[in-house]
Length: 332
Image (cartoon, rainbow, N blue to C red; front, side, top):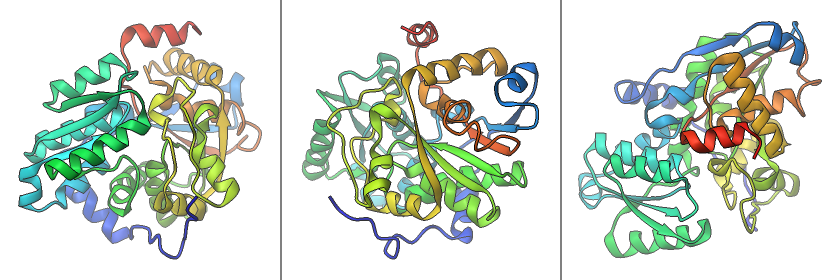
């Protein structure tokens, strides 16, 4: 496996993040925050713990993903835009690429595993994306490479690279301005693009804030990577949080996570389901499993460590159909 190099992985500067924020302002929503208060919160994590949730599940295309997709497409030449783009995703990134291609004025062909939620496939198609289905995520990357090679489309990576991190850093930039003096922020991790970008912005604007990552045990590539010091891969995704199911980590995002994250913790699927239920009951939010991962970490492995702290959570997505959502809430 490839070893990450923090010397080669140069994070976005504050000026670059601010420039990205300006570019995106008419194409994304400046999503609000919500302070979780009430007896339910006090009983679960204590009255002294303050919790603010960044409601990125209200973002256009249903997740944070358009931020990175748009910044990548805005960097393309007119010739590249004429040929279009391609991407790999179990859902959220594919939907975001479809949305970004639509508003930028190019075409998109996205590769998704056959196991992808039907609702997400239909969302992609509704946004004008051509969807190619393959047997698994590993095959999806190979198919996207073929499309890139044979059709000349530009590959928009779901989580790797400085442009992607610059786009996702705008989420951290917003959160840091909305909620001052946070002690900690918990960020869901799939491939690490969100964590790399958000952590960069948070450390620039609130340097004393500790940044944690959270992954499901069934897709723990970043956890393994930070433990070994090398990029790692998994053979199959085994979690209901399929949008956190990156099959491998990559050097840039890993290096930035290595630089800025205090640590990555793991949660089980039953903890994700429980957090989804609490978000519905306590906050009236319908989050997909990945969107509940930050709360699952706070209620589970980080509960004692962050007791009495001012904590930021990211509700990062809500792309889930009604039937699956209520099946998960029922614990099935």
